[in-house]
Amino acid sequence: MVSLREDLTGTNPPPPGSGIERTGMLDAFAHDTRDDVLVLAMFETRPWNLGDRQLWQLQEKLNAYVSFILDGELKDNFPHLVGKPVRIELRAVHEPSERAMGFLGRAREQLALQEIDLEVVLIGEISEGCCGGSGSGGCCGGGQGDRGHDADHNHSSEGCCGGARPEASGHEGCGCSH
Image (cartoon, rainbow, N blue to C red; front, side, top):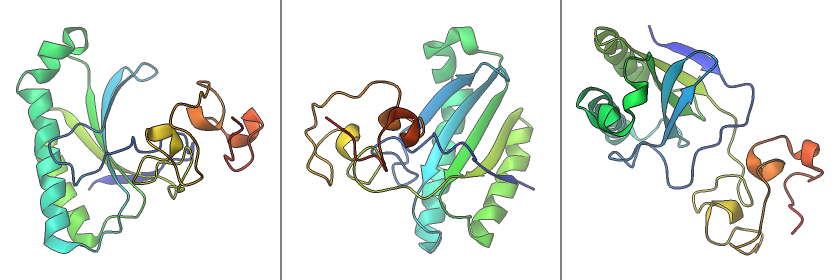
């Protein structure tokens, strides 16, 4: 059975242009130094109502991630991380359908044979516009956001645009001051 957990931090929005529909792209890759595990994350912000097409995209995306891990790209690009435990996360806004969970359960069993963990993480609703990861990237994701911000404005690595809570940076609801 695939574990299903909720991301309570709310600080890991999908990168602009990511998603399981982009099957050949690695959405996110990180070395979690607290647990000393490599985390490869894929994102799905759409509801799980696209049927076979969406399941095919999930399968292809998962195949690309496994290929990255097992076929040498990880070793070639990050030799210092070889041998570390690996976890693939499907980070989804909506709980996967029963069919998707069935597929993920079967995939998890096969990946366990390769010592790769697979889990589903429910993330919060993705806000639109500035800093929020809309499909167009929002003002901080490149291009112009829904609020008419310039693409070249400067955000620090802290505060609402850097993933911290908006109230921590003095921004309200991410109406960023520029």
